[in-house]
Length: 329
Length: 163
Image 1 (cartoon, each protein chain N blue to C red):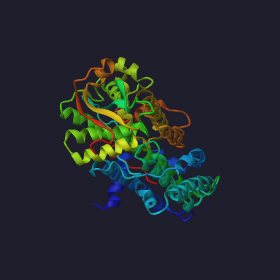
Image 2 (image 1 turned 30 degrees about the vertical axis):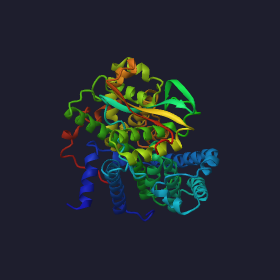
Image 3 (image 1 turned 180 degrees about the vertical axis):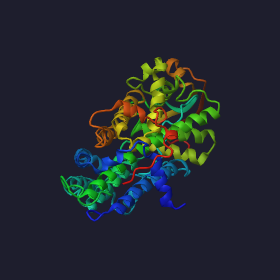
Image 4 (image 1 turned 60 degrees about the vertical axis):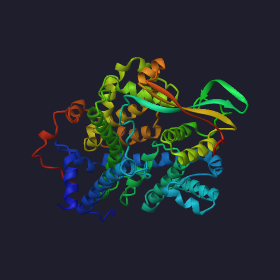
């Protein structure tokens, strides 16, 4: 089969059986909301770039680093001058995102500036995945059409394309969680095959993970000691996390679930900070912005519809989807 | 693209976004899981975080027994040592300790010397006498009682000596 055919089938697989969500791509209200949220994304990036000014002096004092590939060119130039160039690019990218995001070249500069500064931060041995999403979202937003920024635009195709790209950014965010969930589900199977009883499905699974992390850090987290003392309290939350993560991408074509999944995953990050001591505050921001405040979410939360569309648990599982004609753009 | 975009252009855009998602999925997973010695290729990442629950965990602990002419009783662990003994980001240094412990146990002399230079040059201050200890434990049990399933000394070193 041609690659295009495979991709269409993949899109159809994720499309909900119940019609209606495609019509949201034509909604002027959704378009206006998406414009505001994209503007907010670039505003926050400028805020981060401005906040970074506080650490410029310490960044510029660095002499020894192991550059990651996007900043490998630092080996060829004076380190201080190279780092200064990256920091300036970050700041300029922040300003461009707010002032000129209507232009694709400006959005490319924003993406490159974020990639460079992320790579710089990773070039000291530390690996932190809390800031990856901004780079990925900035990349997807490069695809925004000309005219995406025009208030009340009468250009129907520009509106649809803008909302398609916005849903692409949502999909990219959710994909990272589905990948995390996939490894956890795979980990459960692998541990069973190896005869290990304590997995995320075991009543002590989450508590055991938290205990292992506190021992590794040689320090207690805020709620970790309580959870280890009451391991059953982590049983259902641990299973819920695997469920939320694994089926995250499934949610992208189901607007009724956007808010629940966005806030649910944000809550997961807050709780994992309090128990595991692992924080992803920037991811919380993007989850709330792109999913909690999704332009596609229903005006009033429809819990019946949300329950119906729950993956595996809802009545609209894959078995009931057969024979349903897919929506078309 | 833009105001001239038609329905065909929209379908092409949708297909491109879907391809991007598929490519990230495979490239991200490959960058973390399939390429030996490579943890990730920024910004590609597999997002395998805390994927398995450790049933029976293990670690190497660095215990500092002395600093200069002074002995420390009881010895202090690398992560809890004061700033006068440990430099730099100790949570990164901890990873060096794990690699060093494994290299010592496998008898990889050249690797041990390389890692000792890294550890002693970047993370330990002055002349430090330290011991590497291997611990294997049930995490919940160890957190509650401190008990290990196995605990043994892997080696004792003094900064700069034998390098």
